[in-house]
Image (cartoon, rainbow, N blue to C red):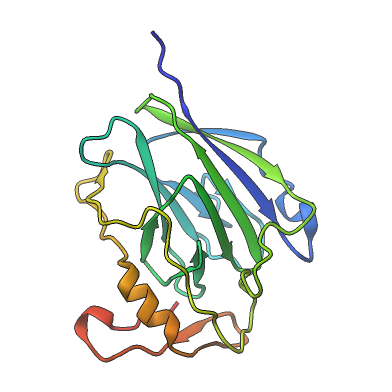
Length: 213
């Protein structure tokens, strides 16, 4: 019996450029179980020609949870100059978080939603893309802009219980971004500079050392 592929239904929206921002995005992209790279670089799997993006901006990484036979996914921020919002949580450089069935993501003025339909195959997955003409995230200040005066408090991530993911084809398991760490970071005042960078004010502890985005 042939295994079915996991399908990620991805919608994209840009508030100023509209669907023209994603003119080079395919309607469908099949990928193996290595990380799928998103950015403006020519070496990315999903190339977005937008000036504020890093060459490698995001990494969508499939993995197996202990005891599970279905692919799960996490999203990692690879950009030093931009922060990423995932379901109300802030990801700074090299931070990552597991994805739920339905996810709302914003980065560099782009809004993205990902809905996961799980299949039985562990060999590959499929991304189906839709370019939306209208906003995908309606919560105030949900989308990232070049300059913010404040950052709203995050909300708990669905399915945020602790798990130990086992990445396919990787030598080490990725660190889990704890919700307690995110809540502490999001309660503090944070400001973006006009260049799109951010500075996070955290308590001075080794586990919560701030990093430039």
